[in-house]
Image (cartoon, rainbow over all chains, first blue to last red; front, side):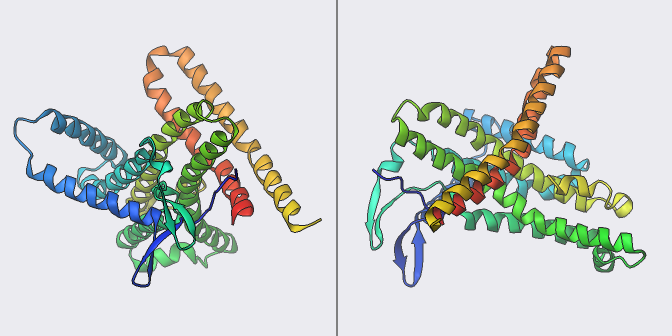
Length: 255
Length: 75
């Protein structure tokens, strides 16, 4: 028996000339499920809540209170909450999908050999990269809108003194490094969990993977939280007025 | 030395050295959290989730080296 681990998702079939990989397939299933579920749930809201509505209201209300305490402003919190909570919920839901028992046993015969039908959606670097880019671009747009375009460029190219010029360049590097640090953290954790599970299953089937699966469950909850909270922190830092610029920005972008 | 052997050695060194920092950091976080809970047991509900988040962020440098090691091995 040989371990089959690949960094890129396996391609299941082609639609026209577009290859459809298993992670792509599953992510679209999740999109469809979440969108349809949200529409149906949104239509069936009642003044006297059912059990399910109660649970959802508690979850969303708690998350909103947390976001508001981080942003410190109700108007800003209302604007950023949908983005951040959607990111959290989508990643969380995708991670929970990997705990459906028996999904990894189903495989499909394709042109390039046998490929598993299921793959953890977040272990596809493309999707994680796109989500990170959304987070980083939103941060930059907010920062341009708050500071104004000239002051924004002036933050990175500061010619007042050699030291300030160097610090500005370091800020620029820090902004670019966000893309890598944010995406690698999420992708690495989920992919490493998958690889670890496969290796443990290979060493000693059934019993040895169990503790690692429980550890993976912790990762599945904590990582989406970390991803969305870091996005929130970046946006709230960009949304602050320029009075405290640079000082507290460097410590967090290094995280 | 052939390519395959160099790959294995490289991946081993990458993850082995990369695991040192997060191990020290996470140990420190855990120790401090235990100290804080010992001093103020009622606050354990507030400290524990913060500890997990701090650990997840500390872990990330280790995860980067793990990603590098996996890329060396499988890509």
